[in-house]
Length: 219
Image (cartoon, rainbow, N blue to C red; front, side, top):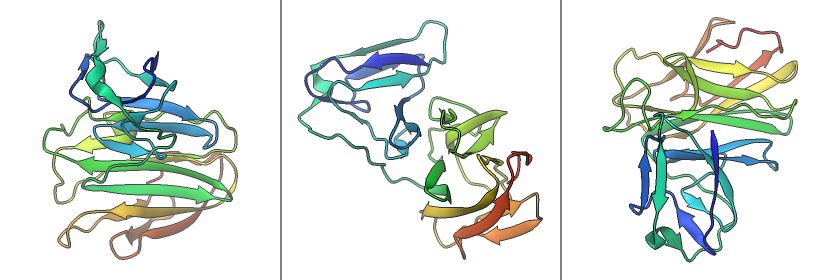
């Protein structure tokens, strides 16, 4: 990751055409001490309340995909915004949030035509929290842990591995808090540890117990 700052006396828009990215993932990462984890905005989708709007004085991280990346911008990227928080943009996606006690982490899998089913600039890598009590959930594509996983098309029988790393022994809940597929699509969550298969289309809430030494390749 490479750290960059918003040098303008206004908010800027990462998704604006005046933000020219070469050899970079189409996204930003911002570590939130309040949330004890990373917020990321990649390919028009966010986790942990991240959005394309970067407030005044905010530092943010970008990730290179090539040896000599570059980022340039002009005044057209500036916004007259006082936004100090982040919001996500809807897409054809499923958002999985895992909660326990007062902690929450989330991962997104979404579909759009310009994405590849492998890794590309629309995928956002998962960076684990620094906090010892924060659990981590992510999907896996091409052996890469992803907070945001962009795929081209959903296919019958498609399997998307989901990893989970608990921070403490206890009870956890996975909730499909955002689900925007049509009625002809049904998505299941399979718990490989217990053998449970649950339709998130029918019941979006799955409760389970986990220990810190469990295999992270659980779902």
